[in-house]
Image (spheres, rainbow, N blue to C red):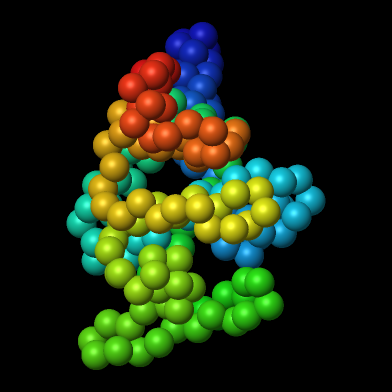
Length: 173
């Protein structure tokens, strides 16, 4: 009986460890910038809202894929940014604030990253120097997202046009 209980406990503990590994280590925007200063890595920003169905779908599918999770955790500082967040965020010497507008407002930083085109979800990529490279609006499947992640990592975007990169890309999935 003790052996059965021990096996059951080990299985639960093992499952718990595996479940933790299948998660992206999301950071606040300011924490990612702070970490980037000490150890430069590109920054990925997932801009979402609480009411966005496609954002929730991306969280349940794309951001749960183990290849995506591992790649993001290894190569990026990942940030979850609520496009309607109420807290102030300091970035590049400026404080970005929430702006009330009708029933829903918006956060100035999200608006700046998306250049005023408020589309959720959006995924923004910053280089190691904390400069915005590209904002990619819309839901991204695991297959498409894997290519985009690789393109903005290791300066691929500087050397290879997207059509050529996409054509030659070898998936890890």
